[in-house]
Image (tube, rainbow, N blue to C red; front, side, top):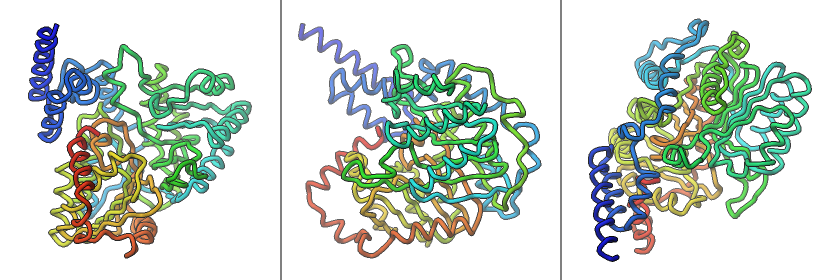
Length: 474
C-alpha cells in the first residue's frame, strides 16, 4: 500500500511540476507552486489545479465560456453613437494611458461627465438609493458581496416599489463573495420581479474555472444615464462596526454622462453570460447621453477572459508616466515584482511615492504579505503610512492630475484572476480633491520609519517571509 501511495505521489507531483514549467507565467509563482506540490503531498497538486493554473495559456482548461466572453468584448468594442463624445488628448501623458486602455480593454475616454466623490457608506448608499428612487426605465446592479442586513433590506424595499412602477431591475452577485445569497434569500428578490443571477456559480462541473475566478466588480446603472462604481460592497460594516475593524471606509464615484455607456457595457456582458438571456443592446439600454459636466472619464475592465492583464497594465502605465508624485491607497498592496520594481524606479527617479494602507487587515496573510514589501520601498525613499482604521478603497493618483478609483487591488488576484472595473478620471480638480482626502491620513504619527521597521521582531520577519512565500498564490 505504501509503495502505491509513493508511486501515486511521484506521478502526481511530476505531472504537476511539468504543467507548472510549461504553463507558468511568472517565475515567483512557478517556484511557489513547485515547492507547494512537493511539500504537501496530494494537497499541493489539488490546490494548484484549483487555484494555480494559468488559463490564459493552459489550453486544456480554456473553456468555451472564456472564449465567448472574449469574442463578445472584441465584437462590441464601441456601440453606435458613442464616438461623438470620445475625447482626444493633446498631451502625450494622458494620450499614452488612454490609448493603452482603449486597446487592452476596448473602452474610450469620454468627455462631458459630471463626477461626484462618495467618501463614506452613508454618502455612497444615500446617493445610490436616491438615484434608484428616481429611476424611470431600468436599474442594473452588480456587486461582489450582497450581505444580509439593513442595506440589503433597503434595496429590497426600493426594488419592490420600483417594480410596481414598471421599472426593469436586473441584479448580479458573485456566488462566492455573496455566499449567503441562496435559496429564499435570492427567491424573495425574484418573487417581486427582480431578474437576479449569480456570476459563475460554483458547481462541480465548472469548479476549476469558477472557484478561483471571481467577479469582484461593484456597479450600479440607472436608466443608462447615472452610474456608480468603486470599492463599496453591500454590507452593513460600512454603516456600523460589526468587528474589531470598526466601520469600514471606502471610496465610490457617481458618474453622470457618456462614460456611463461603458459601465453599462460591462454590466450587459456579465448579465448576458450569467443569465443566458438575449443581449441588451437595444437603444433603450444605451440612450444617447448629453454632456452633463466637463470631466473626461474612462472605464477599464479586466478579467481572466481578457487578452491582457489590463488592470495591472493600467497601474504600471500610471506609475511609468508619473513625473512628480504617485499616491496609492490600497488595503491589499501585494503587487508582485514587476509593479514593485516600477514603483522603486519611480522613487529613485525623483518621483514622490506615497503608500497608504490599513495598519490592521481583515486578512493576516495579506497583512504580512503587504508588510514584506515595505523595506524595499522605504530604502528608495518611498513614504508609507499605516492608517489606524480599515480603508477598503483602491485609489492611485499621479501628479495631482489623473486618478483611478475602482475595485482593482494591487495584488495577483486582481491582476490575473478576478473580473474588475476601475474608473479613470482625467481632471486636476477631482484628482486634487481625492488627494486631499488621501493626504489627511498621511500624518507623522502613522508614518513608517525605515530604521524602526528594520528593528521589528524576528518573529514578525519570519511571518512576513512566510507570507511572502505564499503571496503569489493570493
